[in-house]
Length: 555
Ligand code: AMP
Image: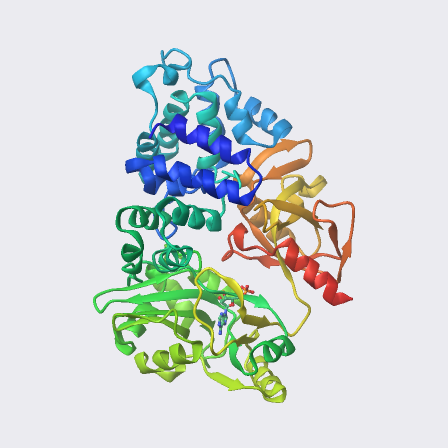
């Protein structure tokens, strides 16, 4: 498929409002995609590689602006690109109007002339090469490759390429639309496509299987040990919610650590973070534990927690010093002890357990792990007092609180459904995306100081501002936060800085108020910085819907 044709389809979808029409148009695109179907099924969502893949593009905004500036036909600088972006707020719009393709001796619009048309396969090939670039000089290599692509692009192609590489496709196609489009294009039931996506986590694979092998082919897709699954997520909720909905609740400790998915095929253990990053090398004692105490093949879900010499849990910050660590793993292993708390079993002995009720899966978990201390204890009860007592014990032991789970619910990957509730004992904090900042003054002039916070709009996938936070941050933290945020600067205007959504702050506050000042329609009273949620991507930040619910609960 020509990339120009993909871009034309994308533009058509972007101009479409009704969900059903979007699905029909994406289905038509899939029907025309031919050999490029797998890639197109990802591109349309602004994704280059499968969600479970270890390959990442790793292109920061500046790198993209540099490639664009180089490919622009007149003397356009990175600053010009930033200025235009500050005006339009859409890198696609900037790219589409840059008059690309005049560089390196090629005639402008070379891509539009006959055989030179850029194809989806070529774009994918170059982006794969770009993702593989590492080590000294890799940044230059990436800019050069991306420049080459932009240089071959027409304006409309550049619009969607720029958005694709920055992960900002935003043509209104979410995961549900892609699932429905696969079902419509290849005449398979939506449920079969959904199940296949849950087990494979790969839109490209599911689209191609649906087209080439139909429903039977989709049914043949299973969990694979070594291919991470999206984690099932929890909502905030109360004991009353749980007992009203389910009659009985399974109560569990909420461990204050990092989510870990354990894959063990008998030869090799792989550990994945909540974002499906491979963190195996950072946690050698977990690997050893699994090899020694767990049957294979299995896929387990759990939480890894840092503990002191007595086995009592240490604060969340401690596990972050171990999780994802690439250097000095052995030294840190001596310094900070970590333990596994497994709470679910998704696959055991060749059998997928996703559709089994939680209580059954928990029994299987007990069967496959021969050390009870690594298996989370559950209490299944309909008695609120028993739940309160369990919670008190969990808090006394130094844990974060409790989880309430529907004992009869299936495991639904990637779903923040109503079957898992997290109950936090104190006022709920919010996890908000940092979308802007201001440079400080005087002594703090070289640090970003005030941070603009945004909540996610589930419908549009956009981020809407809800307030600013400047309190609760030490000078030392300011320096760290500046280092963390600086690579994500999109543009600057005086002291004000626009940031791409990348970093999530946990924020405390006294009250939520309605407010005309911010895009979300809400504002936080006395917001205070708690910590950086390094384990959370912006897509998992709290939503405006949750803010609304919390505001309502305040009365
Ligand atoms: P939050 O990160 O605040 O949205 O809370 C959900 C997270 O709590 C999950 O992603 C897990 O990492 C963590 N967690 C801790 N204990 C449990 C448990 N027993 N069951 C499920 N998730 C847990």
